[in-house]
Amino acid sequence: MEDFDINLQIDEFISKRKNKNNEKEHEKDILGEIKVETWGSKILTKRFNAFWKMKIIDYNIRNGMKNINQLKNKEDWMVQNRNKELRLNIDKDEIDWEKTYDFIMLRNKEAKLETSTKTSKVRSYRIKNLLEELPTLEIINRRNEEKNNNRCMRCKIESESWSHIWECDMNKHTLYDIVNEQISINIRNLKTKNIYVNEERWTDRIIKILLEKSMIKSNQLIIHDCIKGIFNKRITEIDRNKNIKEEMVKFIEGSTDTIEEEDKLIRLAKNNIAKNNKKIMSTVIANRYIDRLISHQEKVYSVGI
Image 1 (cartoon, rainbow, N blue to C red):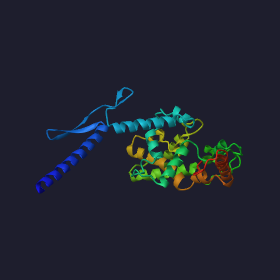
Image 2 (image 1 turned 90 degrees about the vertical axis):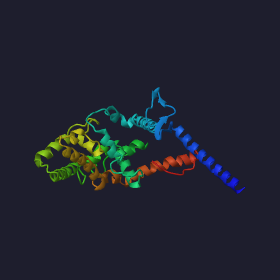
Image 3 (image 1 turned 45 degrees about the vertical axis):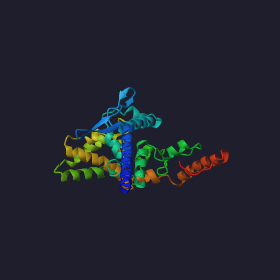
Image 4 (image 1 turned 180 degrees about the vertical axis):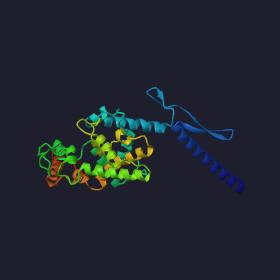
């Protein structure tokens, strides 16, 4: 009897293992892939093929669907009115869009898949800056039904638009100061790589390019592209030397990082909404949610702009 019980237990154990193996094979079948043992070697084969508009997806199905969904999301984003000029100029060969995307989305700085509050804020700022949707008086009044004065609160002369916050004469630090600082850093970095340039001519050459018209946005310059984190090849490919190209990429990154991290012009972009501006925005938000609460009898669990 004891031998019979032991054999019965062994049979049950083998049966359970077979069921587990069958479940694993079934999971692989769902993805269209199975492993077949042939002459002691494992061969990856497909049970069926996936198609998209009668075209076969001839690689990993999971990655294929992921890529298709990402492209659809990008398409939905690009057709928005706010991206009209970007959409019309997306095929311009003058812009390195891959470097631009990686910089704005922090692809080069994030080693992990996880995101933090700090990186999310930086990414959010860079996207808003790219779309020229930083919270200026002009943007606030566009969202607000009760129109207020758009006049800049520093110079009190011009309208506070995206361009003006970088060019206002009352700024403590100008774009010219930041550009000259980054050019000096660029020259020092080149010297460490045994590359020596005529500093005056090199500075004039870079500034001349920065003051040329932008191919992306009408009535703007290439320097505005650099502020947004757009990598213009006129700058990044100013010379054929590989080391110089790398340093010019750092020049654009450094110009944007200086604005963000050293609290120079970013002070205007973030904190330039003085108390008057904040009151306008808070009134708009309060009115919106109070209306929902009273008129529609909806409970307000969270508040967002």
